[in-house]
Image (cartoon, rainbow, N blue to C red; front, top):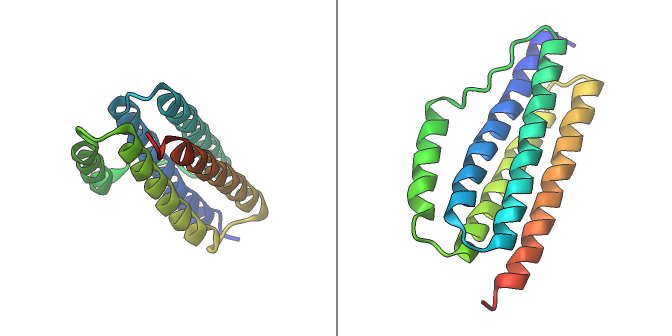
Length: 147
């Protein structure tokens, strides 16, 4: 398997993790519910750890980690800032759930590509954590629906 191709695929995942870190920064600053904010902070830490593991793996393959989210990341961040402005913690929680779900779908597309066994195991581990994020948010949604 071509290491350059694998590194490029992992850089796509890395970009998604960086966008998630930025998104959770917006979500954290937009909520006033302490339990939701604490959960978002833990999820953000998890995404930072994922980005670090991906960067390490890319370097081990001889590649250069590209943590720049590019112009799409800039516009996405700006849009998210406007969308969360003045929203309730519950509404922001729903946005975060939808964003995480879309991120998982994008990552699942990448892992169908050209990854070596070690990189595939890393990607699947990251996806497992991301699915845990969704479960946590579903629990928070259920707890906050009636408020």
